[in-house]
Image 1 (spheres, rainbow, N blue to C red):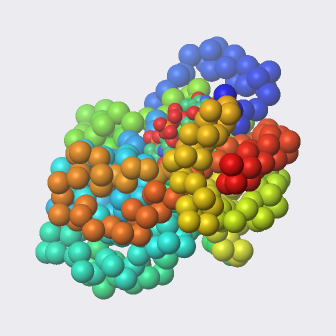
Image 2 (cartoon, protein in one colour):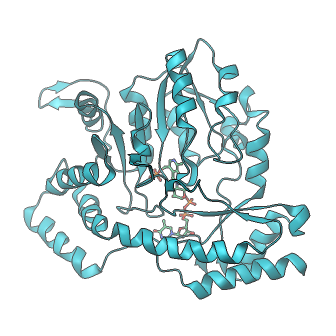
Image 3 (cartoon, rainbow, N blue to C red):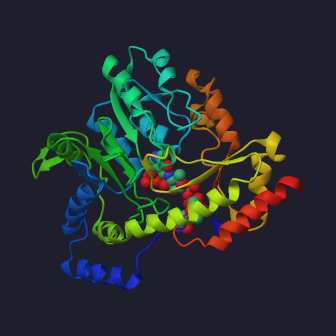
Length: 367
Ligand code: T4K
């Protein structure tokens, strides 16, 4: 089986040097030297003012909401991985689902205002596939209504718009460094923020709330990244540009091959975005293609290619959220979630394999 992704990993021998060092130092976690080094190097590499590392992206998001003391209702997207809404749920916050745009797959700013109530405290958009949301419009609404803006940027490591990292938009952004992401530390995550005081609060909260040995500033959690994850991150960073270059090469084969298939459209961000090539989503128009998305998904799986329907079902369709009033009418998100299929894309995928996947897609249309 060939999967939708495969983790990028550096040469094993290079990682063993780090392992040996950690072993000998006997410093395994709690703000160790690799943790500190990775925070410094990531802030520089990503061009962001402050970054705090986490054991995974979900805990980063849960803690981001705690950091800004978000309560009540938060307007968010149904078109994401379920962790986005679960992080609200774990904080006792009600998600209010807003429909998305068909171009960016992000929240549709024009549909947000109708959902704002006196209980609304924040907006939680997602840069799906690393495609930037309509951040200017979102910020304008957040400012006008006095709402916080927290981006789930789990997919957006290294994505820039002009000279600007998209992680600098909003009050906070969270990242995921899960094995399936463009940059991985096995599991991992981070919060990006704008000032030192906020970073300090985040760092207290991810370490049980401890400000020092005898002071607990709030009900913190244990969400720290350990030294093994951080050391891998330091090493991964040296190879990241090469990983992205390789992913781009693979993606361009898809661009060439899919162009000629009627009813199949490969999705990518606008040309001015320096993207991380983290996903290869296609949309299937069943009338023109002649088969449904699910028929194609099953066909590829039968042939040994395990593409994934990110994101189907919508979060709003899972039983935890289906009863919410805002889950009822999300036509654009619904339509896209029924058309989308993310094709295999990773550093190391061969041109011939991509061509074979595309040939299967072409042939299936007419059979
Ligand atoms: N917000 C958003 C928008 C997210 O997409 C995510 C995570 C989060 C928040 C939360 O961040 P984390 O707490 O995870 O840091 C995967 C990932 O587990 C998940 O991290 C990710 N989003 C989501 C979009 O995809 P699954 O259930 O599809 O993963 P899984 O295990 O089926 O992996 C997909 C394929 O990757 C496998 O078929 C094979 C390959 N694979 C996977 C792993 C774990 C490997 O080759 N090696 C591996 O180690 O959720």
